[in-house]
Image (tube, rainbow, N blue to C red; front, side):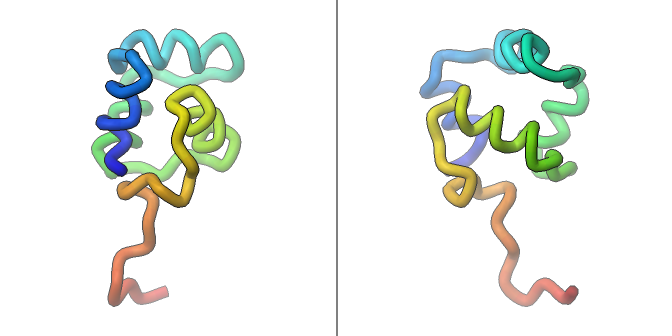
Length: 72
């Protein structure tokens, strides 16, 4: 599931989700946008919080899956 789809299904805008995240830890709107667009991978705490707020399992988030053929 795309993070954007999970966020919207949970009834959040990017801004409202970031406000909710900031009740627990610091996250800027820009950083969250980069996470949602797949440009950044969140740390484990932020990733788990996003999943909890959006009601999605971390392994279901498309942007965080390891791409086939990825060289470590």
